[in-house]
Image (cartoon, rainbow, N blue to C red; front, side, top):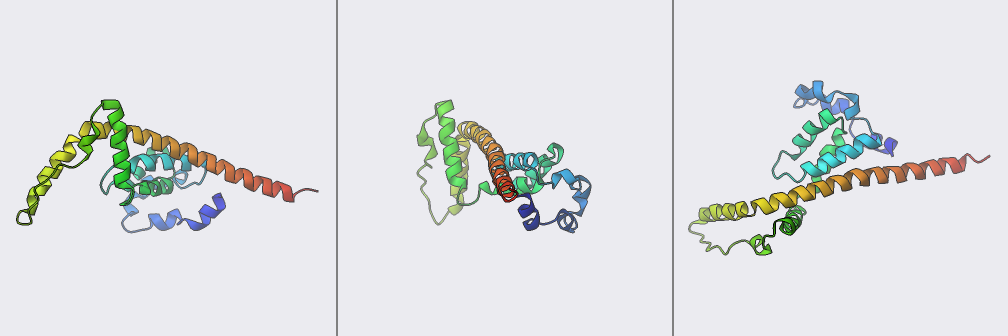
Length: 181
């Protein structure tokens, strides 16, 4: 598995020689950040899964920044942030809000957007109303996102370790069965 990933993934030198990333070379140059082993990749996947829940365009950058002091695999952390994408973002946030209602006792009716009297003559009036609605979800959504991030981190970490172990064991058994005298 390690050999397959090593052949398919870009080399660290190629990434670090990019003119936009050359300033990060002192921090990203450590070999452990790029090494493919079970612990580093598992930790990177967990970091990426948690950072993927952050809305906005900073998910990958934050996952890389957190991976550096923890010596987690940078590529695994960056790729795991794609757990949230335009297709999965809304269901994940709805599930997080549902989980938050179990703890806070809020009603699920808050999840439904308010009935807006939308007019094409004044479309800018919808933005403050939607913002107020989103802010009203705040505490329940934050609690749910916290619970979801813990669940996703544990699932990513242990799922990666188990999958890695299964693949390595299968490869070892295949290699061992060929060595029979």
